[in-house]
Length: 288
Length: 256
Image 1 (cartoon, rainbow over the protein chains, first blue to last red):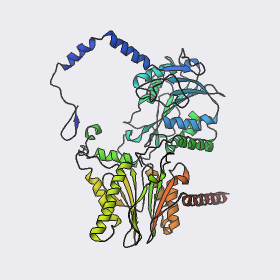
Image 2: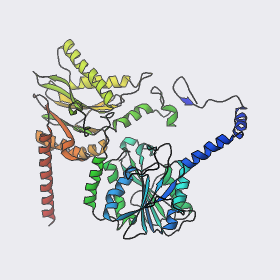
Image 3: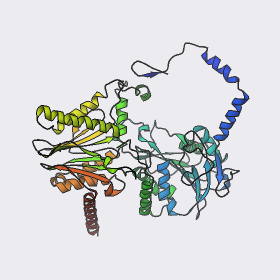
Image 4: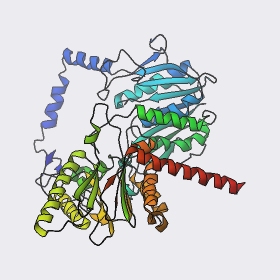
């Protein structure tokens, strides 16, 4: 890559045609040291699924061990806050296990002690109906870890008689449209569903050429391949940190079949949400 | 294609965008919401106050500032900047100096339009120079001119400025602007207290914790600028809530 005089970034053409060949030869000469380093890195980046009480690893995948008919996954802090205030306080949820992982985006270096505020990916089931599962994922799962996460949670041969709902957020500047971003009514919801999902979504479907990224995309692709009915609700917002208006944009989902029966007291939930906002406010002086 | 043309400010993309300027407008959206209303005899500026850290001195976190304050003639130009705090401080300093320089040279205080044009020209210069980046701020500038007419102007990082009857900038500005479009009527701005209530109502649409996080300032014609204390804002908020309750009672009576 090189910058021209006018600031345009272009890929510099290479006239040394033999450069690629030389690189390949060097790559083949791998020392035992390199192998050791690579193995250590792979071990560090391993996704581990732990049982709640004993903190030991699960031998089989989560959904092979526990049967499930409904699975709601929240990815990102706004989606997690929505489920915390509207769904988790309307019933008694029991923690079943958690997924621990490390990658370059993790803020904490110590992966051995999980406190409740730092828990990366926690799985719960409803005490009154243990077939209903919930996952609160507030960490970033890197590309090489997504497949491991899916295997550890869904297993290699998942049951088809369950329904998956995924909630996540994305910045509105990622939304490709012919309108200007200033005129978009952010935050707004878009949905994307697998072929086997027969119900209707409570918001418009995601238009082309927009795509879904990261873990939500991995889960949806997995469900499409294994013919599991799944729907993703994506909230495009201009505030990626924890924000009341963004979380409230998920409210239309409360009336869908995915969350029916799981939400009881909406005004109380709104109060809990407001409290969550004030306790989580991190002040930045950069922006006035 | 954006990634090839957005590294330098002085480069147009093939379809005519200045991406750095558009990205600067995103920086404005990171600031807290501010609303400005131009009434017949009053101008109102309101802003969402972020909660201050425990050990931070609250007085140094002022958002609404007077660019020019003529105590004897009771004219003033009030402004609020939303976006990068440091950029706002630099622009405010330059604008204050310009106000005084104008008074020395011409012996008249600046008009609201003059100082707005000065700020907008300054911002535009920074979108056309090599090695500089645009200011990541939008401003709402209010005041009364010599002729006694109230003015409200808004500038943005590209250096454009326009006069408005009511406007909002910052986070969720669109929601607040839509609220203002629905509720800004001649009646609403005819009386001073109604204009103040409209500003507070507009902010309450997006402010997360109610009246105690709203900073408000007004200028009435021929009177000096007035900053509201938290108590005074609370009084208005309780009045608004009472009116809302009464309106809802009436609605339920009608439906019965």
